[in-house]
Image (cartoon, helix red, strand yellow):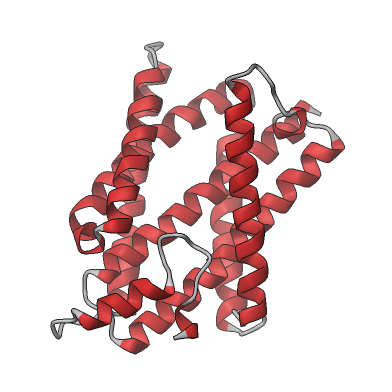
Length: 246
């Protein structure tokens, strides 16, 4: 069914089709999804505060960055392939990502005063704005819209993979980190694409509730939204750092 298409790699059409086949009568609800999303965000905040405190004490933050980043990536992969494990692994994913985000945020904060609060505010402001636009049907998740955002997201992912691989050969792409005009435009485009992914996620969750997806999909859908929000926050943080460097 086309209505279950999404740009978010963890929230796709086949995901809900498969879930509907194993539904045991306890269906997904919007309230349940929102409650679980709030819970996951609180876990992210708690572990972020912890790793930030480690950095503030002068201790090495690298183990928390590496452990949180790698642990979160592994857990995300497992959740994608074992969706019914989401109720157990999504909280662990949130804690790992919190350790990573807390460390990264502390490092940026030590360089640019107030940048983290600005990034957090802009992230949630963007989230609310996208939700309002979606609910008002100002932006609709049409098939053409989905195709455009999907292509743009895939392109960004491939570009980041290439940039990561080039670093092993001591080749850096300047505008990824520098505050040049091209660098700012690139970051603005990536932030916009990340924000548009929220529209597709809202659409998928709404349709999942309407189609009666299994209860565990509340956790899985919350995990998917969290992935998008974390990406959006990191890109906004990168954009603000470029602006500060100018």
